[in-house]
Image (tube, rainbow, N blue to C red; front, side, top):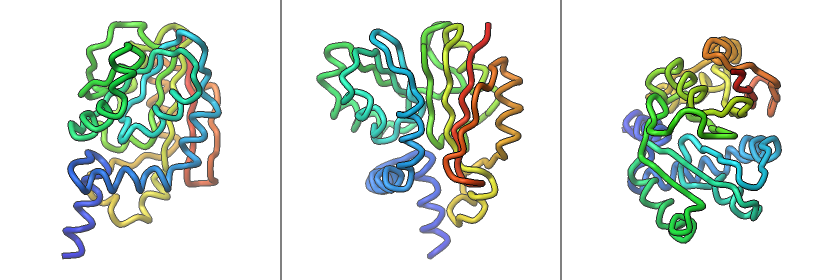
Length: 208
């Protein structure tokens, strides 16, 4: 019974669905505050820039960005249809005005044109990507020259201590993420230690 519950929790972190998905995303909002703040502190928002949130969950960071009242064009992709419906409903006015566009897509292959975004960010989603290399290559493709990618993640060392990460999580060391980022053609400009040996924000630039 306990293992089934733990497996259920792990699955909902990767693809939030139903009541369990709502609960898991709210838990994420609580435990990921420092990680969200790392994005909000280091993202450079200027009028008319285009920003993509990969795996927006319940839309927490999107809400924070919109509340800054900077006229950016906000995009988001999710693999969870439940989260897409929920966040679309909450942002229906922004969607009507064209400020926000939310899509059910996987970062391995998106519908966006090349050189679309000034900034792409993601918080704790890389563990659930089908193919890390494809994901980074796609980010490079859709980033404009000089565009910025902020990748926030927990370390493999830390995740190994958590029971539910045995189910559906692909864990990486910071060194592995550095290598994959560079292999995609992006250049790492800064690695921010959010919490020692636990959480980091890797900032990369699209050099073309």
